[in-house]
Length: 410
Image (cartoon, rainbow, N blue to C red; front, side):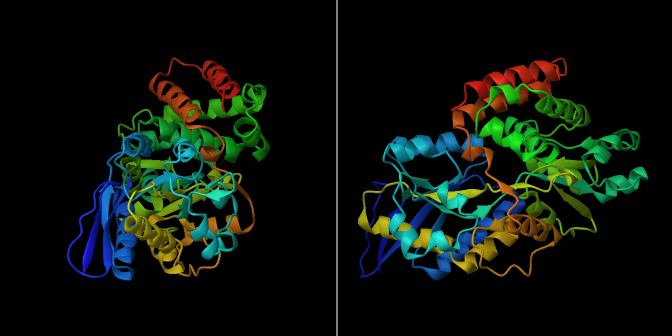
């Protein structure tokens, strides 16, 4: 068998034989327990259903750590076979520079436009009418995860909404618990703020701020309410001395913390811990207030490679990611929802079923990453790093800076 190794655009080792097989290096930032279990399903599918082999290129840390490394390799002439980005504009400049492969022929041959739901996910992969990525899952940020053990230890009922969560904080503190777990990273803190905008205000406010870039709305009284809520979150998470999101999730799992605002990828951690939704923990979409979800998530992009056989192997992986079997296997482990609207998810847990019902109702919004540039996102994350680290920064001062960022956003 002729074996082709794809570790970069310029690396091709050919052994004696007839058919081609490829070692496909795939880069991503999925390294927590639940994430690793989900990636293993992708690797298993590629290895069993094709002649190719998954070479795992996991990069420790968050997407903010991984993306610059991925981008540097691609622009530096050392591309991987495939790489993860979030739905939206994170790979926009790479596409415009001609460094990402056009997948339009694959998308059309496999009817992606007909099976991907909501259609905005494929739209986020489309530039000038051409498809440049394969959507893999739907993730939503708008979840409050609550520890039954923490509230039982404190002798109080599990909250059913954001106001009850805030009101319960003093009792949790008296019981030696951290009311709110939060990692000390800008993407987590700004993510929680964006959850509050969607969950505690009419959806029109979110769209005015992030889609229309309306600085006047960003500086207005509705968003002022959210900055006050962010100040509550800052106070409740003051003793949450962890960095990574999954460390914060573990505080909820072990009953050290009452709750955490985090995306539905947290479900993977609860599953790995052997916990049951509704019995050991509660999940509140929309913070128990507005049950509206963002339709964000992850997609794979395929850098342009110079070798024809390497390119053909990429195409097989792109097609495989959208097959019903892979969609179900991956998303059940990841805690996310499939991008196909025609798959059977009878095995989904209670939290996943809540998300499916909300999306089926059509009550979804585009993710922040689909509406603002990477530069704007970075500025907002830096603002919230400062805000959560320094209690002397008032909500009013932070809102003024936020409105300035939105006014200059692209």
